[in-house]
Image (cartoon, rainbow, N blue to C red; front, side):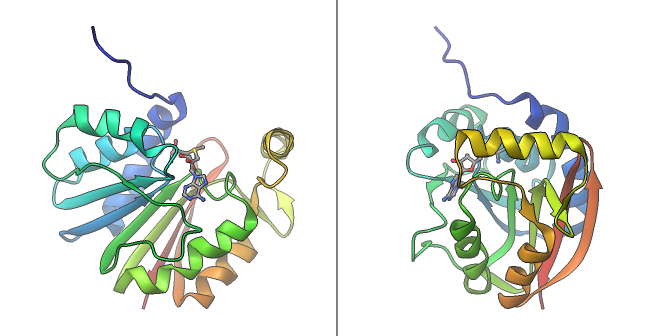
Length: 199
Ligand SMILES: C[S@@+](CC[C@H](N)C(=O)[O-])C[C@H]1O[C@@H](n2cnc3c(N)ncnc32)[C@H](O)[C@@H]1O
């Protein structure tokens, strides 16, 4: 009997557009920390297509076991089992990271956790390290589309602490952590892929 693996259709839809951006920035052999790995589809796909990277996925303690179902099944040499990592924990237990990737996480976690997410970047990233964050953002306090506005209502009905984040606020947090914005890529389905570098 086969165990069904966690699956998200949106991961299937966005993995190629995301890979097109990652391939331009995650260029050298090195290690990646993925935060909020979810179903593991991104981890499996990107580890497969970027074999020169050691892809370390993670998720909160409640969710990392299901993430590991897919990672174990993938059985890739550059994709170790995921670690438990909640961005709000004071010690992330990782350092000297070349690249950090996270998709669809900042609008799920509370705004205070978004602050924690960025406050750790200066500690975990090596000089020259890159952070890529995928998801929806507001600009100048405005949603980019009505569907993102509806999504924000849906998120807040589920959890009042969730919500589409302001690009400017997130970029200010990144700057405080010593990161410089390199690119803001418009992505399919009203998302962005933001790329920062620790200079
Ligand atoms: C919508 S899912 C996105 C999963 C996957 N990255 C994707 O794109 O499908 C949101 C993820 O954020 C994670 N998450 C929520 N709060 C978190 C926190 N405080 N620290 C780390 N991850 C968190 C959840 O466990 C979940 O995996």
